[in-house]
Length: 439
Image (cartoon, rainbow, N blue to C red; front, side, top):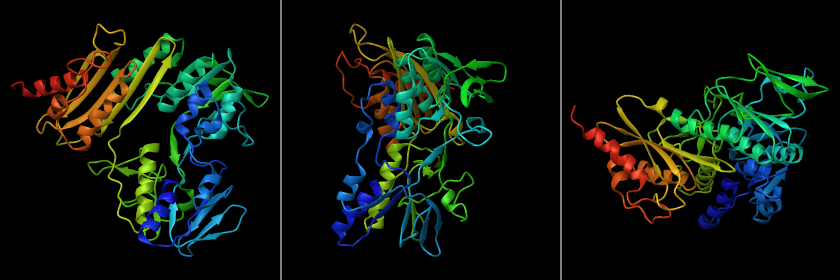
């Protein structure tokens, strides 16, 4: 929808006439999937609070939005979108913004193909409504998956008064450094969550069509519900008959959003370029909105481009006395390749001056290249106010700055919100000092 609206804005500016038709498989548009855990937890009151624009608002803006229209195939030669159970729709230009689908293993379904009762992802507003209605205090829930959604749904379930077990195939928040993910796992255990790392759900025990337990390799865990948070796969089946998909099933648009003549794409169905030019799959709403806006501008004759990503992300786990914010930006350890020679330091401090009641622990991991001194990555874990510190590091990374730029830039200070030497800058300074050591 960001692409559709930008097309109309740019068309008005450039004097072009466009007919913009949007085919949407569901009934909702422009909603915050990232807000689903907070609706489930009760922090967000109503489902409608997550909706940024209703279908009626899109139509009032001049978009021919058709809900309940699932496109099953794009015939790029005939320039036709084939609609399940409906009339085909002709086009001159087509934008693929189909997003991604949650990974749903075979064990989530009964032998006849029907879904197992009590087992679902947290992907759509329909999922949000179901979880908000079904989860009851005192019940048991297993969250399968230790990524962002898994962590956030654990928080939601604990806040709702459920007994929670988290099962993850590797570590909690495995895309973070081990010391950062460990902070979150420790916080979960403090509030009574059973955290089972390096394990996977292999099957379910089902009674009368509803889950009764999950089976791990060595034991079973009784449960009333299972949240499936095992990541997503790009929803690109409508182009499976073409040669436009990468080996991982994604689309790879250029910086304008173009995939092929007359074919454009943005969002979670796509890979994006990092600032260093490498392809990566990073299905985040921030990227989708920006890429959609640039694409829409290009279709209507503008010149906006999508300049790439850093991998910046943030989440939190907050229950009772435990409040942990975690954030990261830059090149992950497993993405570092020669000729980069990373120097990494982990620094611990406080989010505010130690004598202030607001002061909370914070851990910061900074990595920079030994030769060029270029900043490579920053990861943060800490109490209230810790997470958004990553944005200062992201600004330095965006401008391809050095660890010295981060250490010496002018950041704000007041005792309730920072230390005189900002802890982020102390962390950067220590990396610089380690680089400077002889030998």
